[in-house]
Image (cartoon, rainbow, N blue to C red; front, top):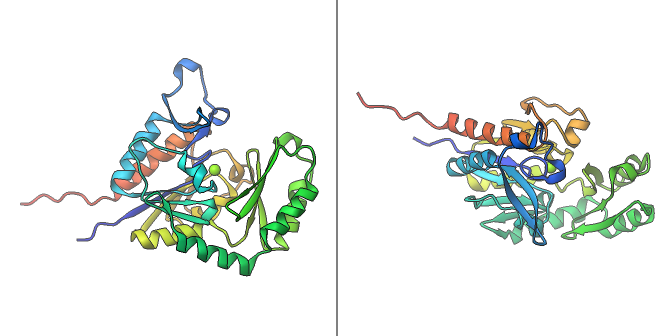
Length: 279
Ligand SMILES: [Mg+2]
C-alpha cells in the first residue's frame, strides 16, 4: 500500500518567523509564550518562533516534506534555522532558486534566467528607473541574485501613489510590485514561488500540498495548495484577500505562526493511514 505523501510549504517571514517588532504578543509579559530564536544576523537575535510552533514543525518534518518558500536569497535563507529540522528542499529568491539538501540547484537557476530573459525587461532597466524615482525617503535599494530588486523604507514615509505608479510602470515591462513590511519589491511576473514549488512537488513525489503565507507573493502557491492558511496580518490581509480552501488564523503575530504550525501537524497526522489490527 502506498502511503500518501504530503508537502508542507510555508513562507518564512511573518508567517513562520517573526522579528521582535512583528511578534504582536497579546497580554502581559509574564503570559508570553516561550520563544525560540530562529535567525541570528550579525551576531544579534533577529527572528523568533514560539517553542510550540517549532515542536509542531519538527513533527511535520518527521512525516511530511517540509519546504520553506521564501523571497529571501539563498544567503538570507541560510540564517534561518529551526532546531532539529534540515529541509531536503527549499524555494528561495521567490522561486529563482531551489535549494536541495542545502545546495542551490544550478539547472533550475539557469532555466529560470532563460525564461525571464524571454518574458520581462532586464533588471538593469528596472533598477535605473527605480533609482530615478527614489527620494530621500528610501533607506536602501538592493538587488537580489541578479533576479529582482527592492527598496527599504519606513511605510509612513513612502509618498502617496508611489507604489501604484511604480507597479503600473513595472507591469508594462513584465514586472510587478509587492510590499512586505519595510520592503517594496519589484519582481518579474514569471518569477514565482508556485512554479518552483510545483517542481519540488514533482521531485519529492508528493500528492498533496498544504501551504501558508502572508504576502501577495504567496497567493499563487496558497491557491495551488489543497488547503492553506494565512495569518490575519500582512499584505494579503490588508488586501482583504480570500480564496477557496484558504482559511485564516484567529490571532495575528507570532501566535498565528504557532496556530499554522499546529494546523500543519494535525493535517499531516490525520492523513497518515490508521494502523489496522489483525483479527
Ligand atoms: Mg511573509
